[in-house]
Image 1: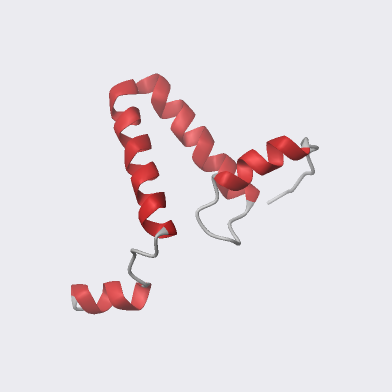
Image 2: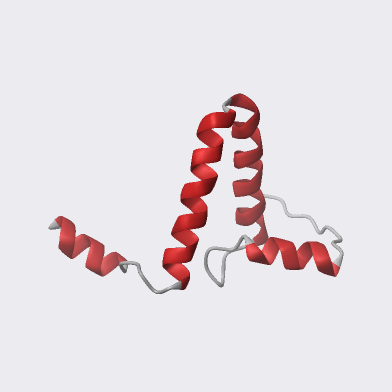
Amino acid sequence: MTTTTIKLYNETKSELDRFREYKNESYDEVLRKLLFIAKNIEANPKVSKETLRAITAARKRIAAGNYLTEKQAKKRLGL
C-alpha cells in the first residue's frame, strides 16, 4: 500500500473529525466511508437516506454510552 499526504484547511479537518466513529479512526477510513455513502446516494437515494438516518441514530447511541463491547456482544450471542 502506498500512502500520500494531502493538504486540508483546518475547517475541513474539523468536519472530517465529526465523522469519526472512534478516536483512533484514520482519515482514510473516514474518507472511504464518505465515498461509499456518496456512491450509494447516486445509485439508490431512498436507501441511502435511510442509511444516513441509521448512522446518525447509531452515533447518538454511542455518544450516550448505549452500546455493547465486543465481549458483551459475544456473550449475548453465545459465542
